[in-house]
Image 1 (spheres, rainbow, N blue to C red):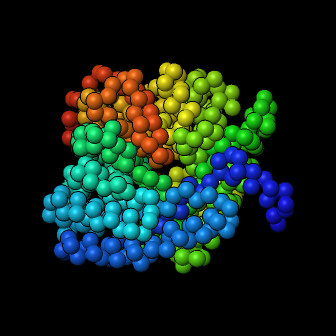
Image 2 (cartoon, rainbow, N blue to C red):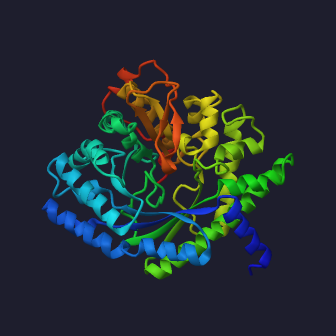
Image 3 (cartoon, rainbow, N blue to C red):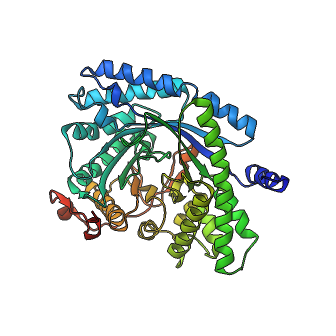
Length: 454
């Protein structure tokens, strides 16, 4: 039973502590939209998205009004387009045509982002995968709502280093094609290892082939709520600290579950998962870095940061799985530099470096996220960073990712403004020593020994 105290407590979370449902994401399978003609494929795709997601925006707005819970984003994830376009796309331009159709229908149904302009190439690349990757820079430059991701490795398959090398080059091209907008195309492109099939968060969302024809996935976020709860137990021991985070995550997840079930009922689409990720925003008081400071660090990046983040991530997951049987996606703590005011401040004062962020990715939900670097960074260096993150994910059997932005014309010390939820960021230095000879090797890094469990 829910008592009046819990109702008041939840209201305070929403009104004063930045609790929100970050996204309702409808996952849609487009496998049945494939045709030998690219124009017919585009028409089939648009018709199916209209039919399934046409009422998403209104439904989300109605639920937000009736329940008093802010629902920030309405999104769609789709089957990786390299699969859908395999029979009709003969060149990169054909894929760009699909991207434009997707962008148009996303605007029509009123969603903020559409994810799934993607390829899964963790062991090898088909010609279709290669063409899609080749098309990514132009596709992101000429669309507003399309997000792209490429999965280059997994614990079971190892790391496709040919794809890693290609993605470094692709990121540079995407940066150049959106140079007039501070290379913001790269903000909608993420390279993953062990990508989950049910992630509702952009830019890495896609609708996996293991999923139903359509599914509702909800992402909940409340860094401010966790920080506020920890302020009340300042100076207490680790047991109290952990219990407080866990109980708070439980309450946040229950709010997400309520919204997810209601959206599922109204839209007539099965409920998939709740993703309880502490995803920050540039708003003051909505920061994962502030939580780390409340735990006891002077700044994010100080000694102890990785341990504090590991504690936070684990307790968030424990609280979430007690609240819902269907916690999935990424679930934990995000550390996107440009989207977290505390991380921005830590980077600006030198407390936080890319090397420290890499260490933190061993214990957080994703990886190196929304990091601006100098525009003259070589493609091989970016590939090396991707390879490092993929290795962390592969060995530790977790999702890792790289969403890095080489800002053309900017150098260390400059600031970049992306706007909205993407925020702003200082340009951070990268290691200038070359890994060109390593990245130039062909083939793949084999799967680790602990992957052989059958």
